Picture: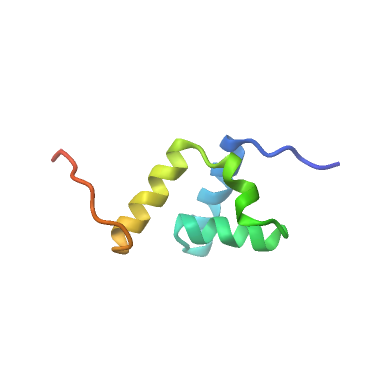
Length: 73
């Protein structure tokens, strides 16, 4: 029986991979795709806004994207 993946469940899987494997969110998504023999484009429907924000934050930290301005806390 195949388990149905939802955006929430996919985000939890990716967060677990980030935590346990010490990967960025994008690397965790690619790792998941490799382990499950999926094309990265096929998981796009499971990436919600929260996960997109985490990917963007990782990319900014790695200087792949220009940093967005944030209000000081």
